[in-house]
Length: 282
Image: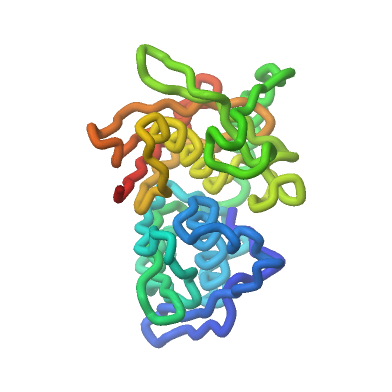
């Protein structure tokens, strides 16, 4: 569901004649701690996408509080991947093509007008009643799985993070010679103030958590060849919600010879929940 955040990342919004929404981005690092991370870091990518799309859509009157929305796919390109990358300061949301769908497109730019991100997403809109019934049943099934007693997270330096709370994944193991990790996102390590950057509704594992876990797994895989960078593009296809407080698995399903293209699959219980592809430039 599209919950309107208490703090607004976008301001000075202007709804244009064609329905596009121009906006400026908040740059307050105390309010948005993830702004201290490099612009290509996936926590930043996912956070900017979420807060910009929700904030601008709210201003444009595109969010119906009587309906639920579910993102089915999301893709992005990050134009500023190097050490000299500058953060996004303003952007524009494309005109809404179909009000009966949750599709959107956003372009963001730095202070000098250079492109920083391009986001596109596709989704569905439906009434609350049917969704709530399905959601409760699906969640109950996963929450019936055993609670992990001693989940072992990879040490921070292995997954490219600074503190232990930021590590969401186990060390690499192998299934039929392909790397896999177990992932556990909880109500403590998945959200502020426990986690220094992640935020959300607390209802389920968010796309930001999924992409962060994938970036951590990709970091371990690419580190074996001495390669360290954030992905410059990616795509996620969502099939099912991933629940908090129960482990899920992230499996490598394909990788290019130069390790610049990785495809990963998310599963929880017996369910295939999402597929993600990262592209690197190095």
